[in-house]
Amino acid sequence: MAKVEWSDHFCIGDDRVDQEHQDIFELVNELQSAIDHQESMDKLAMMLEKLAEHTIAHFQHEESLMQDHAYPGLDRHKHCHDRLIQKVTKLIQQFQTGETSAIQNLMNFLADWLRHHIKGEDQKMIQFMQQKHHQLTTVGKAGELIGI
Ligand SMILES: [Fe+2]
Image 1 (cartoon, rainbow, N blue to C red):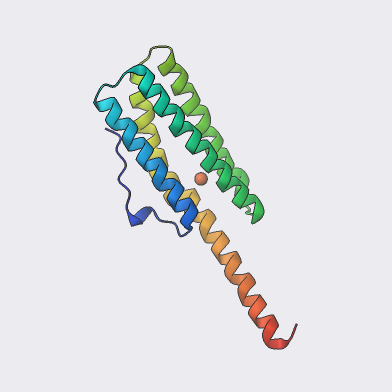
Image 2: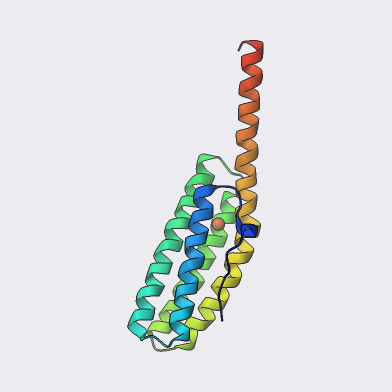
């Protein structure tokens, strides 16, 4: 079982990123239900592809946010994304060649990874951006006060 239950605990303070995480949780849960109900390989493969597409698009979104904010942890964070994609790609290939147990391994791994990554790297990234935004607005307001 690799269900991931969404709760506010996983909200990291950016509405769009939070929504994307929530969507990924839903896709993980739908896929886990399909596995539990022993749906066909074709159906599982289609759902897996959808999950992979969403995850990659979400990673690209986070990486462009980090780039836009000159986030110093970009390389480290991107490395985590790249390693996840490599691992998932390998497990998908094993699944496609008939290793059906690979999909459950993938789900367990992904559920665990998501929980830790969101509360770790993603949270650090958003905190940095919020701090930066706060500094900019504080400087802006101070500038207005002293007339610059
Ligand atoms: Fe991330």
